[in-house]
Length: 246
Image (tube, rainbow, N blue to C red; front, side, top):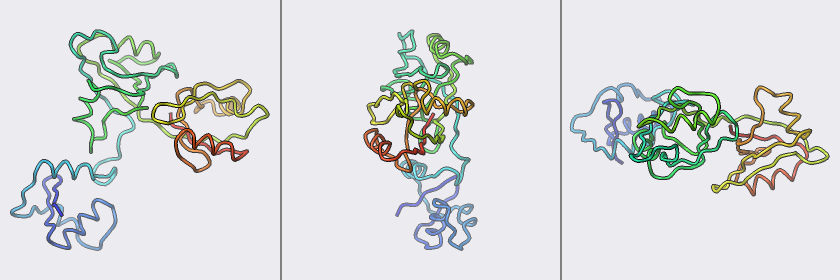
């Protein structure tokens, strides 16, 4: 067992009390031992490598030492030399909702470089299905955001993580009225909603949090899985309790 250190504190992993204190900190489970003394009193002779630090940060869980991972965060992406348009950032972006840019996938380039330094315990790495909602101070229309990405040697963006929400619908005479696509990663993504369908009626009632194009279906009546599995579960019940991610 290798020891790890956080904020200048270290654990003597040869000591049972120290080992159980480490477990308590990582898991949030009380051991009945005094963890505070262990966390604040560095041990003599402890040598910590960069690899140990990295491993320990990867093991860190949200809400234990730091605040919960942010739902929104800022990022700065450097434009590759000679690339004067939005495509220079090597991202596939979806503009279906009309006011954000949804990251579908990205190639090695500015995004992966950013992620190298802002992943792990920082939780500010850019991921598929994140939404860019501001570019260089510009908000509003998706087309304006794309235009803002074409100027300057870098872009300052604000990014929002997907947010899950629940929908309850019942099959209508003509079905659900959903048009969906299957992404390369096997997820089920909403393409459009037909008028006078159960989802159209849901959106009229829940107009502040409607189901929108580009949202992902991630759960059907308590079951999660890939697109094929979700479609299967949707055909088994008349009443559907769904979870989408926007």
